[in-house]
Image 1 (cartoon, rainbow, N blue to C red):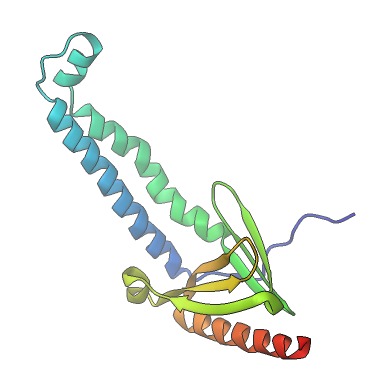
Image 2 (image 1 turned 180 degrees about the vertical axis):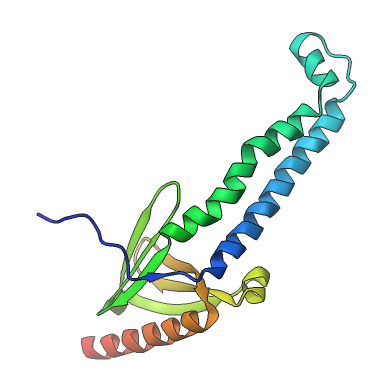
Length: 171
């Protein structure tokens, strides 16, 4: 009988909180902006009943959207940081992610085909990177987001080195 999965050993960079906060703020601005645009469209329209009340109080739509979404904007980056972890142990990369639903990923190093690091604009500004691990399995690729750029580079190099060694041993 096995017990619960243990946490992987390493956290992502604390700067990932800032990255996820910026991403959440962009989504927040787009949602509230869309609600404000809808409110401007609805505002003053001669509509009967409930729709008429909404047309006279159209400003409540972006306020309600903002009030509902703001706690998520603040809490989501903190919850993601608390959950996102990774570890390279022996011949397996182990990662955990997800704040609403959790995902545990185990990638055998011997099955790795390519390892890449990627940096978007915000990641580069915050000196962060994402490691992408591609395998031949049906599950496709795995990613570890929010790593310090130097850590991501070292991890990618080590994964590529170990994968090459294991491929050489298998032939």
